[in-house]
Image (cartoon, rainbow over all chains, first blue to last red; front, side, top):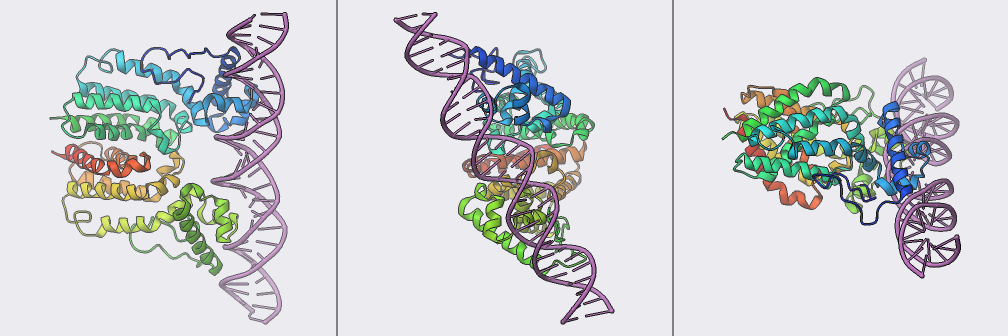
Length: 206
Length: 206
DNA sequence: CGTTTAACCGGACCGCGGTCCGTTTATTCC
DNA sequence: GGAATAAACGGACCGCGGTCCGGTTAAACG
């Protein structure tokens, strides 16, 4: 939850909307400092070492400011993931097929899942750290976008039953990979990707 | 994680094994006190109000003792769920069909999912409170049991591709319901149940 | 019984995420 | 430039889950 005005992940396409009153210079500077310091700690010592107190100390920014900016520890991690998420959204919303428009719905769905699993497997550690209390998950903007996109493809593929429910269930399948321990993720990734394709084709075949 | 010797959920059938050295009388008494007090707080004020300090105070048992017994807050909630979990295991492992043995694999799987969704929807609040860090989830005994059972049925149904992966994915689908906000759960339960059946039949039909 | 021993007990203590509110400062308007 | 104002700031503070260790007590044995 970035309260500064650069709302993350929501706009679906293009750069985020400019805030009505532009961000103050010191605020922008501190945001940059925070993200830099966060990435440095993350690279050096991993997510567990990234405590809010340490981040405050090493970034030279007060603790209260961090929470004003990102709302929570989870919000900070989401901001860290924001850049790559936004790029991914662009690819499946307007990039070349089979991920983007132009390919048959089932093919797009297969490609989407494969890409997403691969992405998740790389950033799983950070995603785990970004985890919010389960109840809040549904409200995370990026998840809404993904769910809507899946639902669209499922409908386009002619699924005759409850489309939103299937989309919800397929999301759950794609999310599950992050709960694997770090070393198993790479090992299982090919099998999970094939399993996804098998699942999608079976569920959506006439 | 109950370290007392009454290991939960593992034995699959029948009562848990007796510990080599039986539990001391005071330990047993305190365990009962703790579970009683926990249930009372839970009923009165909900999971958020069940803090370890309050539980220590109201049960008259020291805080250190609570953690010796249950290992963590999540472990306490698992112990609270243990009784009904054990009953559920009995039903699908040796109860009457279609949940228990005797019915075709697909029918058993459909019944299993419906039952599990219904159960989850009732105890979702407690389950959320029992949530462990995602990485640890795979290690929870009850989850292993469920995964093995699903894998068994999937194989018996003649699924020709990667059976463990499909079992993993189906588990994720059944788990997803707990992330719905409390009021939506009851509303969505019928649709999710039908969605489960649809999914299973499509994936496992010849 | 009395002694021994090992398990049990409990509350002081720790580091964490998150909040609060008095202070500082960038920006705007005369 | 100087005054006014709203935003940004930051560190003291809180309650939480979890740990630690010296004191206590139940059980086993002669």
